[in-house]
Image 1: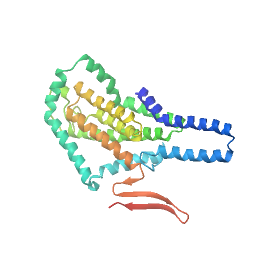
Image 2: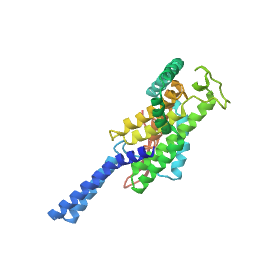
Image 3: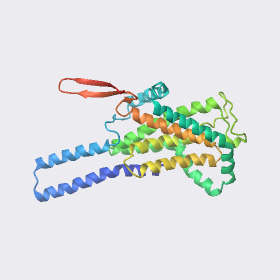
Image 4: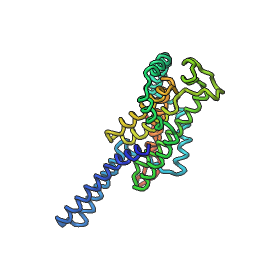
Amino acid sequence: MLFIALALASCAGFQQARHKQRTAVDQQARNSSGESDKDAAKKTKHLGKKTKQSENRNGGRFQEVDLNKKYFKGYITDTAHILTSPPRWEGGDWMKAALVLGTTGAFFAADDDIREFAQDNRSEEKDRLADVFTPFGDGRYIAPALAVYYLQGYAFENQRSKRAALLGLESFAVTGLFTTVLKYGTGRDRPNTGNNAESWNGPGSIESYAFPSGHTSTAFAIAAAFATEYQDEPLVPPLAYGIATMTGLSRINDNKHWASDVFFGAALGYFTSKTIYKLRQNKEFGRFALYPKVTAQETGLTFAYRY
């Protein structure tokens, strides 16, 4: 996991390195041509603006995300917003919810057959492959990896790296909370207990907690955070979602989860992370938006309502 974090860090820092190299070449050219310091300052300022714009090209203006009290307060406000969001949903949101629930139901109907197929075709090679991807959904590995990624962003003053790490950590925590509540609220037996897919024990069970898959929800929460932040990097989204998908499949292979557990966990992690990212962007909440306003005459906040 640490190697993946470092790989993503290198990918994220590529543009910065290329900008520094271009600046160095420009400096040599100025020295050769005798360009004045005033002209050089103008070009440097222009390049700085372009760099700032490219850093924010994923979503325009973005709240500065730093490791402070405001960041941790966002855990509470973002969680509350997600829990109270259904009354604010629009047609498209309800369609997504219906699609997730409908697909989960379809997997539920086929859970026993999928388990039988997966176990009949299980092999040592698949087990070893599962061992590689399972840690990507394990908090014992995820948290340290995100910490390392944040520290490299802090050390090199890379705001995107810090933002990806901190929003990834928040997505991991909030998704974990939702997953835990559902696990102990539904009390579904795991497939390795020998019971069928229809074995649900309800709230209060301390041994049955298959639904949804925690490893899968965690993997997709982190994947969505990085894929969204680095959507302009061609390799990051497919790499992130590919790893998350393999993590989910490893849980089916290991007979730890039903297919419906894995699918719903993936959807839970993905949409939770996407929502958190949006909430941190422009302070935008559904139809409502709150923007800073600074003019020569006044300073304050602009409240907008989208019809």
